Image (tube, rainbow, N blue to C red; front, side, top):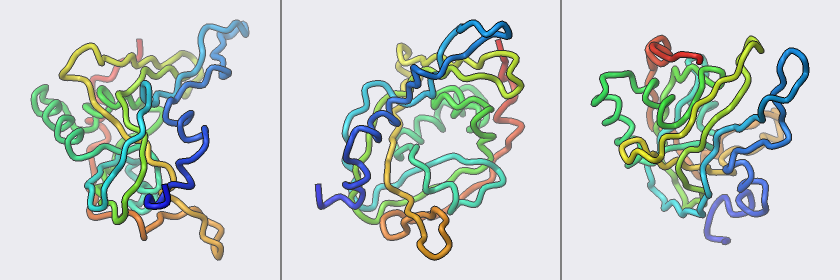
Length: 205
């Protein structure tokens, strides 16, 4: 494991649990305090260890007001093949790339407006968990309902493999802030996305 730049951060059970995304102890209650469900924070189904070679191109979405260098330390990414499938899905259905990401990557508006897209490249070999997206169940921002995004992996055209890569961020001992480990991953480019298009047609049921 020493040949992977994030081997230490990949070790242990916590990265696997984060990749799995389930929060069975987080209850969703109605106004009377009755438990009506549990939070499922998405994640991926049956995460599998996956090796990324140096030079692997990756894509990640973030908020419109976030700098690319602040988006890149996050763990959730798409490789080039999955991103191309996402783009193809958006074009085929004539929807925005952001809306396609909501559908296939299972990202509710409560999590992000998907206003920035970042492309990065790994500088050293890294370890990741890889799998198909899992269903999301989270409370709405106003607390008056629940957002439910069921996965659609039974439809081949909607199966999208995602990556969870731990250890891309490190604490700066001087500033005390978390920042990107630029020695292992480099931000190559970023794009501003249409945040309104990323919610156009999104319905709360």
